[in-house]
Image (cartoon, rainbow, N blue to C red):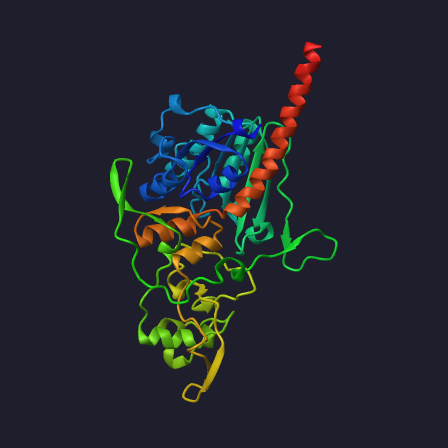
Length: 393
C-alpha cells in the first residue's frame, strides 16, 4: 500500500519532513519551495523532476496532482492582530495557497507544522474557520504541541502539529521516548547529544566548504556537500576563546567574568540565559536555530569540557584546555542533532546551509507522524477493500 501513498510537500525547505515520510514509504510527487538553495538541497536528495523552486502562488491549478497527503509549514506572520475579516489581506496569502493545494489535490490527510505558540495565532483561527465552513470543511482536525525529544530526536524542539483527516479522526502519535521513563512504560530514554555527535573530530580541519559547484534548476550553486564535508569550524578571536573556556556544560553567559562580558550583557543582568551556553553530552540539545554557529545566539558550544585550573584574576574555574573543546558545533553536528541522515546532500553557502538546517523539521518527528498517518490510511484502505469484496459477493 505504501508505494501508492503520494506526498505533496509545501514550503518544503531542504526536506526534513519528506525525509521522515519517505522513510515510512511515502512517495513525494511534488515539492514547492521558494528558497532556491533549500529547493536544490531537496532536489539533490529526492530528485529535481518534481520540485518547483519558486513562489507557491505562481503554481497553476492544472499542474497540482492528486495526492494522498499534503504536508507543510506555511509561515506564520508573528501573532499580530491579523485582519482575518479582510480575505484580500496579503498576509493571508500563503495560508490561502496551502488551502488551495489541499482543495485541488483532495488528499485524505494533510499535516501542518508550525511554532509551538501557533494555536494562539490568528492563522490558526483562519484554519478552524476553513474546516467549519470553508475549503477544508470535510476534514476533522487534531492538534497538539509535540516535543521532538519525545520521538527519538536528540533535541528539545517543540512544534505545533495539526493533522487534518477526511478518513476519520487521526490522533497525534504517542511519545516513544521520555526524559525519565518509568519502568514498564515501554518508553525509551531521551536520545542525547552524545548519541549523535560523539566521535567526530574535535578539531575540524577547515573553516570552508569544498570548492565545488553543481547545477540545479539551470543555475550553478555551491555543493553538493555530504557528511564530514560539513564538519567545518570558525576562527574565534582570543577573547572569544577565553570566554568559551569559562562556560561549563549547561552553563552560559552568567559564568563569564564581568570583564569579558560585552557591554550589552553587562547592561542586561537578567534574561537570555542560554546565550554563550554549552551543550551537555548526556542531554538532548536545545532547539537548533538558523544561527547555531554563533555562540551569542544560544547554547551551541561543544559539550566537551573538563574542569581545569582556577583563574585567580577572575575568581572563576576555567576548563582544561587539553580536554575541553572550545568551539561552537559544526554544520555537520547541527544536521545530526536535527536528525538528518549522515549521507544527506547539501547545496548552498555556509550561511544558506545553516539556515536550511535550523529551519527544518527534525526527521524523527516527521517519521513518527508519518507512521501514525500510514496506519490510519492502511486501516481506511482495508475497510474500503472489505466493502468492495462484500459488494462483489
